[in-house]
Image (cartoon, rainbow, N blue to C red):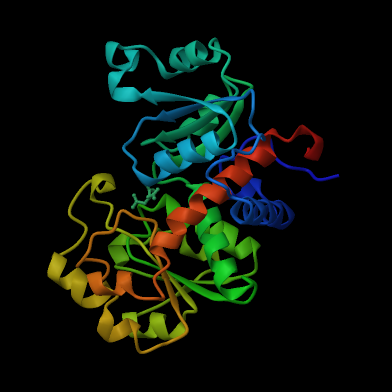
Length: 306
Ligand code: NCD
């Protein structure tokens, strides 16, 4: 019998076995995808997309994934809700619960909100990104994309470059890719590195050429200005000079792939032309996101597998 968690709040909710269950199911959905026919895994379920923070990819991806599994979806727009009139988050969740919803997909600017919601409702919770904490389904789609490309994750050297400090994508990826047996390298400005680096068991790199030479996979991050409280960089030109991945430093290595969770700030963390090359996985990540999210939603509702 498989033990699958009730909720997906952080990467450590999933062990290696759970992860491969998700990848197998995602592959099944990908191979059997037919735009004219939906899967029935979530028939009879209502999924609330509770996004308290802006999103393009993640929101649309979860909505499509839910619909392709035959769920009903409910779009909760925080800025157009009674939260603006002073209603508490707890009351908002109780109200949505009373509409007989079965699953919440939650994005919020504050770390811990999906966990807090899990203390209010018995319905299934999936974290779609909470503050600087975690974004586990982004890590899942990244891992699935890497697995499809290399046929394995164990033993791969995967670097994460850029604004690690503000990145929930980095936090989920470090935990999940370690669980899958990858080596993790990190590179970014000192002011954008968290203090608890030792805890992560990651290799710290010192310059852009060195980190690229070391890597089989590069995961790039955006400078997340909306999460910065003060100027943490001397200048944008300096960031570009020392941290940008560009034609000059990236194409020296042929067997390497580039991932980015988006949104991409072209000309800052990456040179535009690189994102159009064959080793850029950015568009494939978006497509894979739908299949991996379908897999997670299906497995979380599959009571027989629990
Ligand atoms: C990321 C996010 O929102 O955490 N994007 C995403 O979900 N695709 C990364 C980011 O905002 O830079």
